[in-house]
Length: 75
Image 1 (tube, rainbow, N blue to C red):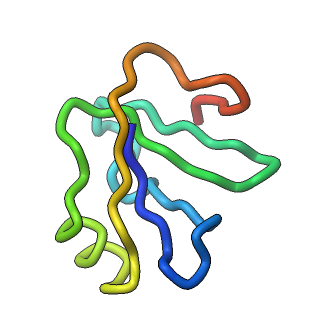
Image 2: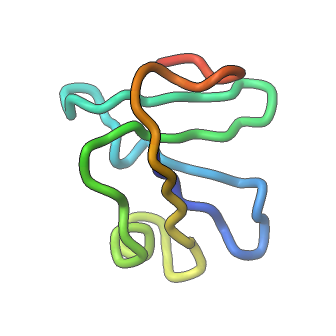
């Protein structure tokens, strides 16, 4: 499960760019905190975040399988 977060606003996580419809990945969102994550087979890299969102975004991944974690819903 991966997302990119903005260095200056660490609570801001984005992942939609990697989990667009038809990608075969699970796009998870916590509507309360607006945190996004993508459950995928290949981790997002720092270069992916920089090219998709800007150089001030950092890749963050953790091993996770299954559906969206508690507090998040699949979109």
